[in-house]
Image 1: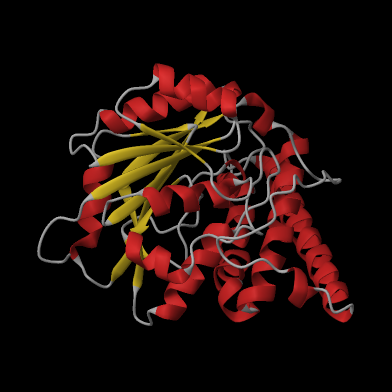
Image 2: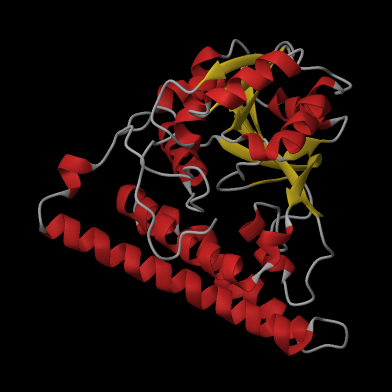
Length: 336
C-alpha cells in the first residue's frame, strides 16, 4: 500500500430516523469530497424504517443492515466486513466532513507504520456554547478537546466521530468489541480506545496519527448542553474506562488520562482564574466533570471486582465483534 494511494471506504452508522437531516448531510458531505471515496456504506442498526427510507432517498451509498448485536460496535463491524477499501473511515451520522477530509486522511497513510488516522472534530452547536462548558471537556459531546495536540502527532487512540484504519488490521485485531460502546442513546463508549490498544499490542512501533487538517463538524443539539447530560456522559465515560482497564490493564488504558489530569485540567483551572477565562462556573464544571468521571470509574471497577469474585467475568465477557443481541436495560445515569 505504501507504493500507491490506498482505496477508501467510508462507513456511516445510524440507528434512528430522528436524525435523518443530519444523516443526509453526512452522506452529502462524503459525496462532495474533492477526492471522492471508492464507496460509501450506510449501516443501519436494527431500524427497518430507517433502512427503507435510506434506500429510497439516498443516492451513491450502499445501505446495509447491522448483522451483529444491536449497537455501534456491531454496526461498525458489519460495515468493516462489507467494505472493499484498503482504508475504512468511520463518520458519525450527525457529523459532516469538510471537502478535503478524505484527502487529509489518506495522506497520513504514506507512512507504512501508520495503522490509523483521525482528524479534528469541531462542535456545531444548535445554541451557542454554554459559558460554563469547558473546551477541555468537549469529548463529552464527541468532539476534539483542548489538550489534544494542536498539530499532526501520534496519539494513543482516535475519536469515533472521525477516524480511519487500515481495514486488514481492524479485521486481524477482531474488530470492535460488542460488549463496549454506545447502544442507541446510552452514552457508553471507549470501544475505539480498546481497538486502538489492541492494534498497538499487535504491531509494536505502529502509529495512530491525529491530523487536525482532516476535519468534520459534529452536530451538538441543545439537549447535550445541559448539566444533566454533562454529568451522565462523564459518569458513563468512567464506567467505560473501567471496562477497558479490566481488559487491557491500567498502564495502557489510563496513560492519556493521567496526562490529562496532571496537565490539561490544572492548566484549565488556572485559565479560569484569568479575566475572560470562564470564571468560577467553568472551574466548577471542570471539577464536577472530573468527579463524576472518577465516580463512574470507581463504580465500574467495583462491579468488575464483584463479577470476578463471583466467577462470572470469564463466562460472560463477549469477544471482539460478538455479543448478545438482547436489548440492554436502562440504568441510572443513562442519558436520552
